[in-house]
Image 1: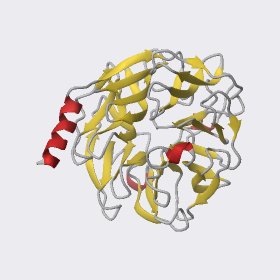
Image 2: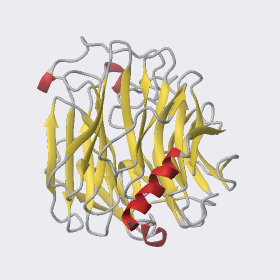
Image 3: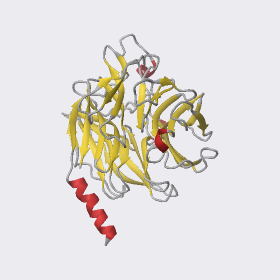
Image 4: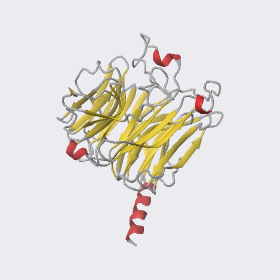
Length: 395
C-alpha cells in the first residue's frame, strides 16, 4: 500500500503542473542551464548575445531576472554547456572548460579538459560541488574528462572503443559512468567560417543537433529533404553508448549502430536505471526516440518514438529525471506552421511517455535542469525571433 501511495503522489504532482515560458533572458542563443539544488532561487545560463559574444548569466530570484557575470569569455569559440552544484559552476566549451568556486563571482581556466559537448555533476550534487564529468574529445581521443576538485583539474578517461564523437554523459556514482556518442551528416557550410557568423561558425562536432544551421540558430522553415542523405549505412549517422563500472579503466559498448540515428542526452537515477534520447532526420529512423535500461545496460529498449511526417520533424536533445518515476525528454517539433517545444513526460521511470502534455508554441527546448521533485527549468530558443528564454515547471 505504501508503494501505491507514493506512485499516486508522483502522478498527481505531474498532473498538477505544466511547463511555462517563465522569463526572457536577453540572449540570442542559450546553451546550458544550471540551478543550485541547495539554493533553488540561484542559477546560471551560458550562451551568446548578438553584438556581445559569449556570456554567462546569473539569477538570484529563481530565474525572473538575470545579470551578466563579468569576464572575458571570447577565447572560447562557443560555450557548449553549464552545470552547477553547491558554489561550483563549470562551463564547457569548444577548446576547454572554465570554472568558478565562489558561486559564479569569478571564473578561472581549468587545467586539462578539452572540447566538451556536455558537463554533469556526479551523483546528486557532485559531492558538495567537487566531482564533475565532461564528455567530448581530448587530444584526438573520445571519452570523458573527470574533475574531483570542482573543475580546477580535469583528467582524461578515454575509450579506444568509441568509433564516433562522445557527446553526453551521466555519472550516477564515483565508478559508474555512461557516455552517449554519435554524429550526423554535415554540409559544406558546417566547416567553413565566415566573417558574419554569429556565434562563430559551428562545426558539426560542436552543434547540439542536426536542426541547427551553420550559425547555431534553429531552423524556422525546416522540412525533410530525403535527397540530402543516402539510406541505411550510407546516411552519415552513427550512435554508440558505452559504460564503465571501474571509473574508466575499462569500458563496455552496450549500443552501437550505424545508418540509423545519433545519441543526444542521457540521465540516470541509479547505476541501473538510465534513459537516453536519440534522433535522425534521414531514413530509415527518421524521427526521435527514448532508449531506457532498468538493469544496468544488460538490455536497452526503445520506450518512445515519434516519427517524422512530410511537413514536420521531431527532435529530442536532452533528458532529466526528478526522481525514479518522473522525468522529461525535451526538444521540439520543427517545420510546422509554428514550431513547438516538447517536454515529453514519463511518470513511470521511462516505461511510457506522453508527448502531448507539455508543449510551448514557437520554441525549441535546448536543455533541461531538474532542481528537485517540485522544480525544473529549461533553456528554450524562440525559433521565430531567434531569441532565448527560460521555461519553468513547478509543482
